[in-house]
Image (cartoon, rainbow, N blue to C red):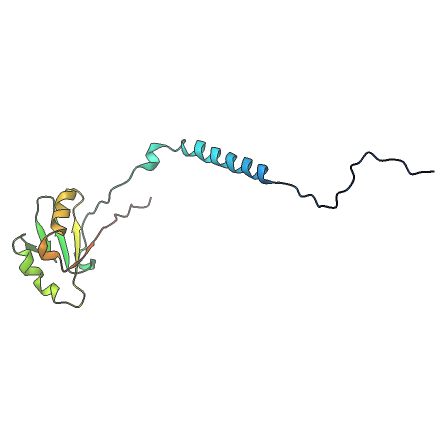
Length: 141
C-alpha cells in the first residue's frame, strides 16, 4: 500500500519568517492617536504660570554684590541706594576682582525693557551678570 497523499505544497528548502512590521506600525499609530487625544484634554488652568512673589526679603542671605531694582527705577547696591549715574563709579572696584560678577534682583513688576536696558549698559560690559529669583514658600496646613 502506498502512503496517503497529503494536500501540502512541496518544501522549497527556505525558512519562512513572520513579518511583524504591520503589527508594529498599528501599535505605533494607536499610541500616537492616544497621546493626541489625551493631550487635548488638559485643562488650561494646568498650563498657567504662577509668578514669584517675595515678602520680607532677607538681604543678608543673598549673594553679593547684589543690585536691587524697584519699579520706580530706584536702585540699591548691597542695601545702599545708588543712582544710575553713580552706579558706574560704585561698581568700579568689582571690575578689578578675580571674577567680576553682579547679581541683579528685580521686582516682579519691573518692565522687561527696563531690566534689559540696565543689563546692556556699557559700564556693566566687563561684569558677569546673574539674575536672582526668590520663591515664596506656601504655608502648609
